[in-house]
Image (cartoon, rainbow, N blue to C red; front, side, top):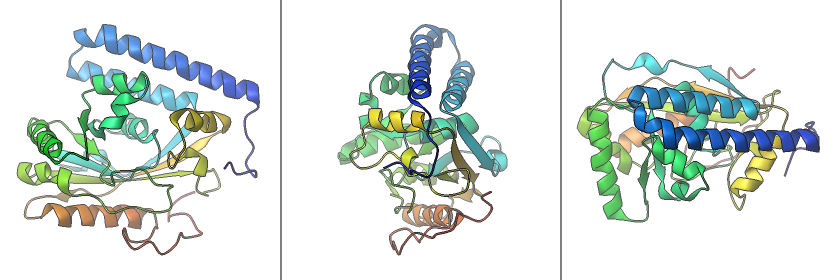
Amino acid sequence: MSDSSNALNPAPIRVLRITRLALHVAVGLTLSGLAYPFLGTRGRAACFRWWSRHLLGILRVRVVRRGDAGATPSGAPVLVLSNHVSWLDVFVIRASIECRFVAKSEIRQWPLVGWMVGRQGTVFVQRARRHDTSRVNRTLEDALRSGDRMAVFPEGTTTDGTEVKPFHGSLLQPLVHAEGYALPVALRYRHEDGRLNADATYTGDRSLWDSTKLLAAQREIFVDLTILPPVHAVGRHRRDLAQHCAHAVAEALNLPVPGSRSGTPAHPPAGTP
């Protein structure tokens, strides 16, 4: 339910934003289908970064970034690990960090956008099938060793922003084998005054269309994107690495330790304006 204390856009502005969003998706589909075959890896990455930033601009999403994605050694295998709150997460991260994603197979079924995200080199995984995790792990390890920076949402689901769920370690095994670096990222959607923005979440029975309408209704959406210090995977078990990163993300967001939900703090994380 929307917070009534926050002013919302009038109906004409909502319709305009959704119309612009639909046109932007059409542009993305055209680029993916016609231009991508003639672009190299860098060209496709730059194109998707531009598209992601423009999408955030249409919805008036303001990203407040902290930390340095370049803190890892040049050329080292890097796996970005982020908490998962909204369908916007992919575009918020991609607008700020050069990476490809590992995503659940359901995203491939999203109308139009699923196909377009797949064209960006996204690796899809069917979490319910153990043998598919093995296939994805092999693909992921090859990508990491070849120098691709990959990103995953290791909670395995979205949350309402009031908790960080334990990170699953299965998709971290390729990083251990590649002797790379985990790069934890903390995401928090909020209002300008620092309060959590529940309308930006993509949880429960909320459909993609319902979520889009809620986003279009808001005048501005603020996202804190905090890039935490990288963690070298050498000598670490994947479960320990996953737990360490989950705890680091929860601490950055001033939330309870993952797996020990004890309530939601009333104040915003330290450093949030």
